[in-house]
Length: 620
Image 1 (cartoon, rainbow, N blue to C red):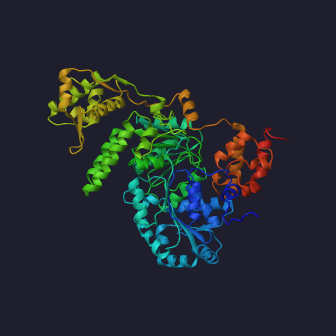
Image 2: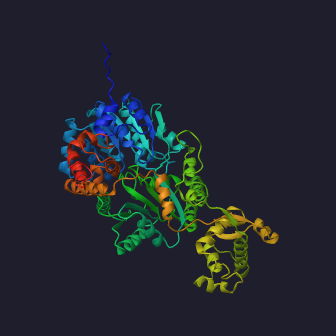
Image 3: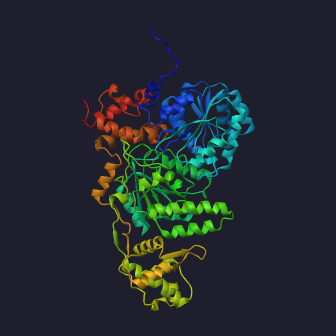
């Protein structure tokens, strides 16, 4: 007689409840570790399926699973999704009116929920800790766990207080989840949460469905219009450094008929929540935001992320670009790069009082500018930053991804002798004329023959180098200057308003009249149609019936409006695309579509089949 096992069939639960035939990398091991009662540290990329890692155990394990989440909007989003899956879940936060808050508290006392979402500051409240001890907590999940580390890119003091969980619930397993954590941050998470030696699972940081481009910022609104033209009607985020910039871009896009809203910390909480809800429910196409918008945004169908300004560091860049393509479909990430942004950030860093903090910030900025100005594959550079080697499925080390700008348009070396001579001569002539040095933008003004107030005030229109560089654009001159700085012929003095100085090596180069090679400037415009098709292919785009997909999206939009939830809560685009490929004709056929579990097939199966049949692509 076969031995009966008490071990749950997690594959069957995955299929029945979540609608997936297989786990993503590391999910199975994380789930099994938590079911065994172990602590787990999980580093999974944005869109890598972190939520399922604690939601599936919450269905199986006895007791309540408590999820620490930093944002109110994220809590509601997750609870809406769990409701669609038939998992009883709730949240307690300040958005709830007193009557509703009290009702949910009573339901928690009656053990009617499997999952409870709380903000860290509410969790460590004495009353809440006392209530949790009576609610039979079986698992704690700390989302965005990098926030607990001062070495992380988004440190939050309230996360530090979570160390109390080990004292108050010594036997309850704990899972810490994040998308971005260097080794130092990982060690700090374990120490601060006082985790028992955890099972550590670090997935690849590679997001194969994302493409990366860094282009010189030159007429940015025109560049943004080009990106929008490549993504008609698709959702996107534009990140900016300042509140004012978000509002300027919102106004410009609105004048062009694009549904866009600004989002920043200067808006009151209610207005921020309203705008976020508009974005999640596709009432606006583009969110123009500071970094106040983003963490915990689980909208899966963001197809592009644009950085109008330089992000804080590579970790921030990785996490912000990671908000594109969470559904596994292609997403495009474009950074509009200006050396002036790096100069401004450097000035802000110089004002930091603590020398150690200044040193860390300078190192972060150096790595980021190296990434932006480098000619190697963007994906290879990103993965190397996180200590990972880019390999194919056979373990072969790769140096190109075929989808980033440096792979699609490799920058060959060109003769930079004449531009270098002109640039170095201009820097020397300006100092000789005025007795002081100037910054990069003024040197470019002189070379291009610009009629500016400073050029007139200092008499630089009379220099022999005035206007001699009109054959090159401003962005090209900026690139040449960066190349000379990189080669050590020019120094940018961060202690003296970032003025340019010709180094001894630069003076020797002028005297020797040697030939010099530099990297060709980055392309500033849109990709050609051929290159875009190559980019799509390399990021996993598949051919599907566009008419079927459009009809399914219309059906989903109507249903989501009736239910008052974002469209992706009903079905992800990736699920609709799979239907548009397979064109199922029966409910049994639908069970083979990723993302359709038993509950969703029962609720929506006939509607889906009707949408397919109505186009004559299925049986009559």
